View (tube, rainbow, N blue to C red):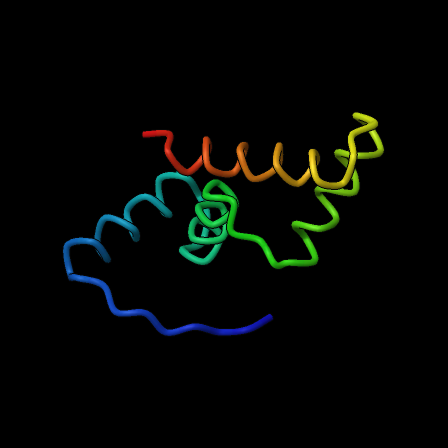
Length: 79
C-alpha cells in the first residue's frame, strides 16, 4: 500500500480526526471511502466496471461506458 502526505488546515485536520474517532475508523479509511464515493478509480477498475455492466445489461461497449460515466458524474454532483 502506498503512503501519501497531504497538507490540511488545523481545523480540517481536527474535524477529520474527530470523524475517524466517532466512526471507529482510521483517517486513511475515511479518505479511501471518500474517494470511492466520488468515483475515483484506476482506469483498470473503471474498465472492469464497464465490463461487468455490459455482462449484466447486455449493452454495447460504447453505451456501457456512457452509462458508467453518467453514473460517476451523478455521484460527484450529489451534495
